[in-house]
Image 1: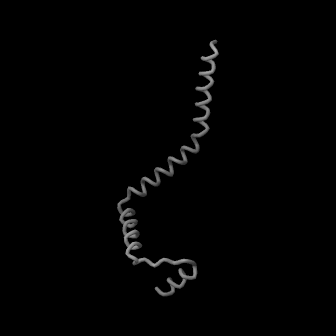
Image 2 (image 1 turned 45 degrees about the vertical axis):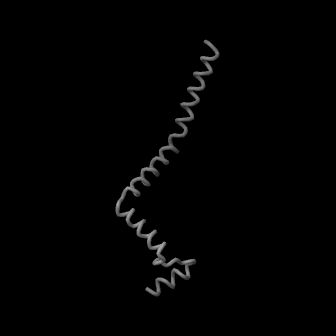
Image 3 (image 1 turned 180 degrees about the vertical axis):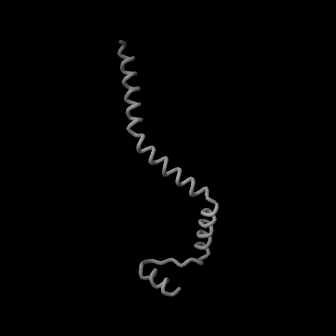
Length: 77
């Protein structure tokens, strides 16, 4: 068998092995991407995000620096 042919075949086999080894990681990444796409495709979620950004920019949102401020905020409600 020709040495170039053997090296090419070994390279192809190595590429397949690398691809197969990465499949579980790729599968998890695809699941995460699917979840993100579903979330960002939800009109109610996007409206909520836009409202939150708008309120934050307008200053109508209370920002707490630590847990004490969070507790005081809830007590004031």
